[in-house]
Amino acid sequence: MNAARSVADALVSCFTPPEPEKNSSNTFNDSSASSSGSRQRRNSNQSIYGSSNGSTHSREPGSVKFTMEEILKATKNFSPSFKIGQGGFGTVYKGHLEDGTMVAIKRAKKIVYDKHLGVEFQSEVKTLARVEHLNLVRFYGFLEHEDERILVVEYVAKGTLREHLDCVNGDILDFASRLDIAIDVAHAVTYLHMYTDHPIIHRDIKSSNILLTENLRAKVADFGFARLAADSESGATHVSTQVKGTAGYLDPEYLKTYQLTEKSDVYSFGVLLVELITGRRPIEPKREIKERMTARWAMKKFLNGDAITTLDPRLVRSPANNFAMEKIFELSLQCLAPHRKNRPTMRKCAEILWSIRKDYNELSTSDEIQE
Ligand SMILES: Nc1ncnc2c1ncn2[C@@H]1O[C@H](COP(=O)(O)OP(=O)(O)OP(=O)(O)O)[C@@H](O)[C@H]1O
Image (cartoon, rainbow, N blue to C red; front, side, top):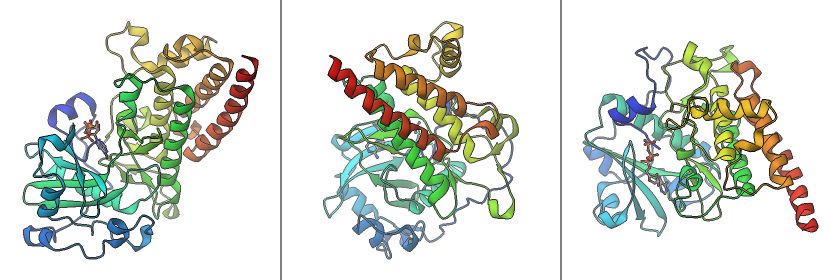
């Protein structure tokens, strides 16, 4: 999850052809975040900082500023014992705010901070401040002071979906949890596409940007690449923009045309569904050539009636799991359509997944009765 990325990270995982942004409506100018400005107390922040159900409408994007003193207090001066992660953006610390709220404090690496990454930071702040949904990592505020760039967000205890698929803690994510996670992500992205003041395209839906709670519910994180969608009322169908995202998840039509729409998130979601079923990463460089691009390999097997061979070997083969796997692959195939017009909306994906879950639950119950 990142608001900015290291050069190495950008080279490895991101495509950024040297096309200038043509329709950048995302510039966030926070000239007030100067050294004295950042020391000011937050003014209209109660709706985010103090309450759990503040309306997004009452928030002014970017108005929730933390002071360095607060950040240092929350992290015990960035104590190594509070460190919980390291990513392209920088270091992530666990911290407690004065009211006891547990937060994740994401401190940008100074060496990777430059003008370009600054725009990403501001874009992430602007987007985070606009949104509020149970399945999105909640935003508490930020600090932009001299060469420090810090985001304060909800602490999500159980790590990333990718870590769970890799079984890093030894626990296997069962099929029902994977289905719930797919639905949570579909809800979060539907909210971004349809229910914010202006539609937002996430642009970096992937398993390492999905955090899991204690109850294994999913929260989508990392708005560093998010963009406002085209204004359909003005007749626009897409925004033209530099390609950003992560290799393996990128919409081929967006790659070819630089035209970004909500359907690019739908494509990435299709890749994520395949990842949930197979447990594999979207690109598996160490496998034989025909298995390297996981989605292509799995969809081919599915179309040949051989989907079962792609099911994560850690998952039980049961009538309910086999049924849901086929149905989810059917949906993945639609999401992965080469042309965006043939992909479902994210809302449609959510509806299809609800129906799969309903049938899955019924089948699981009858499996149990027969055992
Ligand atoms: N809100 C959070 N709550 C709990 N842990 C978090 C939170 N955000 C990040 N982390 C932890 O910190 C690690 C690093 O996160 P970060 O967002 O910086 O980078 P990343 O996703 O690993 O990499 P990249 O920036 O390249 O996408 C994550 O893998 C996760 O374990």
